[in-house]
Length: 320
Image (tube, rainbow, N blue to C red; front, side, top):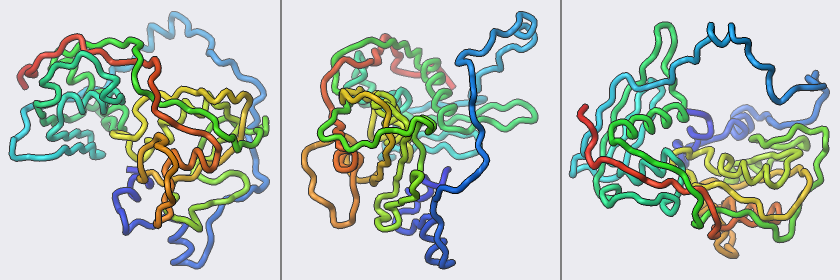
């Protein structure tokens, strides 16, 4: 579990490293621009040169991680709610989950982006317990992406699940521009978004801890930023994040830009729902931050998007 997830779990008792150093040691930790050695990329090919036939023959693809053992059974009717645990020991424990919720979680889609699901997807609940297999001398993969890939393969196998993707008009996120407040990029900056303050070292979290997320983007285009928004929004809640679709750039803004974005990840829906009044605790939602700080607007609109279509699924899994 990373530091941001630990803060989310700790709740009111959480304290950031910045606050701890300030309050407990009387020191200040901040980012600043200082001379330092840097690696300059002079040239690089986007595609590597092909492997020789001899190398291909001697280097077979490593096997995909899989569960060594897995059990799937109906949930005890006395258990209420949903519990998903992926502890760092190669185990997965899921309780009380419907197939609809499980598919939305694994494929990371909204309910509107799933078509053809049978009725039992929303009524029958399941418990899944699985252990990851490992090769001698190596630890089992425990990262969340690998775990979800293995759970997907498991339900496809045990429920004989068959799906395909197709374009349909459904509610999906769209990024538009109102009154853009962007700074033209320094072309020497590396393209991308990262956690933390920019080169100026300004950190709004110092004066307003409720803005627990601070993201700095440099030399990035609007299509590139729209593509990274789901990752930015869902970083603290990968299993059930607020943005469950790709984000389409409809800003019409060309060029590359530098900017920072600070928001409170637990303060409401990702999409704009109109003018929101300031909250007493100083929290700002992602949608509000995009509008107030960057002059952009994230909205849920109906547009063509990739939909997961359920072709076939057995109502009961194969035996454990």
